[in-house]
Image (cartoon, rainbow, N blue to C red; front, side, top):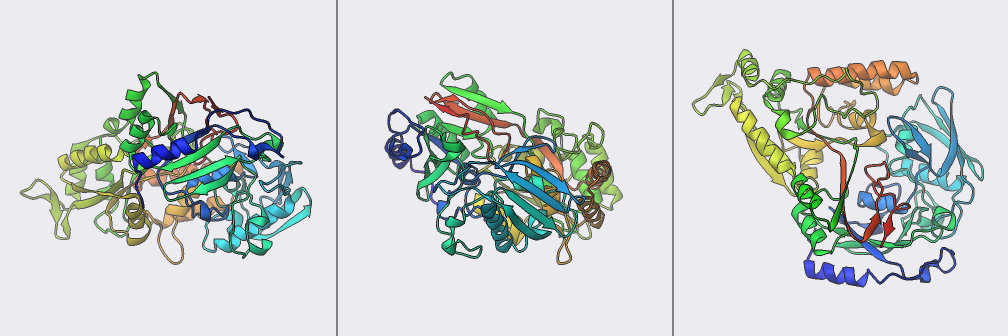
Amino acid sequence: MKKRITGILLGLVMLYTPGCASHESNASNQQSQEVPGINIAITSEGKADLLDATSYDSAMALYGAVYEPLVEYGEKGIFKPGLAESWEILEGGKKYVFHLKKGMKFSDGSDVNAEAVRFTIERAKYKNPSTTLQTLMNLEKIEAVDELTVEMYFSEVSNQVLAELCQTRPLRVMSPHSVAGQDITGEFKQAIGSGPFIVKDSTAEHTVLEPNPYFNQGNPVSYQVTFQMIEDGSSRTLALKSGEIDIVGGTLSNITDMDIDVLKSDQSYQVHEFPGTMSHFLAFNPDNKLLNSPVRKAIELAINKAALSNKELTGLFQPNVQYVTDGNQEASVYDVNKARRLLESEGYTENKDGYYENENGGLVFDLVIQTAEFPEWKEKAELIESDLKKAGVKINISIQDRESYYDVLWNTKKYDLIFYRTYTDALLPYSFLNSLYHNTNEAHGVLTNDSKLTQLLDDFGQTADAGQQQTIFDAIFKRISEEALAIPIEYKNEQFVTSRKIAQFQYSGLSDAPIDFKALMVE
């Protein structure tokens, strides 16, 4: 993956940031008008040539900029109209009916209609055969009843459909004209969505997007965007200070809390902070037999969470996540002596170097992290290394580049401990846990092997009653706590820093597509 070169980037900014020009919203001449440009940092290559709405192949930020969802995320299980103005859930969660807004168009001028929705869902099902999404896994059929009405039928209760439809991928609506032959199996040709932007140009370093003249029923945004790939957190801060970047932060391009604190005191920038739903946490390799329940619990007891965060970390999930209540997540109390006693009760004795061991080996573990997306992880890892040393547990920190980190997490599994982040918003808590903590017939979960937790997740997925759902999640949270299946290290807010060029910035409410481009104003 290519790294940013300042001189080239400055040239790109000059090339794609023309002076302010008059703007007319008429769709027939919008693209001929010059518009101001802004530059947004992202952590990975855009890969706009692969921006199929039903895929996972491009940078997350691009999906939200080009495609729109049927429904939008509110908070704690509340959903708002998107391309669908209303919907009904029938037959106990086995049938969904969506009524589309009138007058919505894709960027090629074609109508956003029921047939386009049917095409998108069927293509997503075809392209993602191993998915855990209920919308695709349980789908029996989808019908375009008329121009603006779509009916979806499911083989079993599917209580996550709205949550899945509002996310950035793989269910945002695309035009059938995006693929060869308008066939669900056709080769992807170009990204045609109804969102605020159209892909204008893309390289390994940047993706330039211009306004979609048909967006918002012919009331497009008045600026273009360049998403600039900058892998290193410190480089992102420097790019902001040099004027090469106008927006950093959030899941798009985190910078350290220390850098944000410095920028708060500089009147050249504005810091924006919004409540978030993401948690950062420490996870364990389920294939490491030394990391059994008592050892995991001892590790949690030995970590001083108050030094990791200025928030009280009561459990894996933030308080504003659905199903979390004041009392259903238990906080462990920092107690190094209790941690040592627990390890000794498991037969471990201290060796001459001050670390615990038994006949099966020493408590020496590799902790894998990355700093491209989460630059603050290095400092947190060092604090945990110091804490666990006091408890007789040795930690070796391994900092991987972004690509290698994800290869370790999903493929090679060459880690003992690993930092990861929860999903966000409507994908919490069920979809996140189901994708990483659920055992299948073929393999255990990515981050655990716990049959009781798997059964609870299965029970939830079959339940339409809200009261029963809450009861099940009370038990799920208790299980995660009792077994120390994940140790929270931070509850993240959504923080962004903007240059003077940004006159108005508003959070969209969706972490993976965080910028409300409709509300964004550019000087």
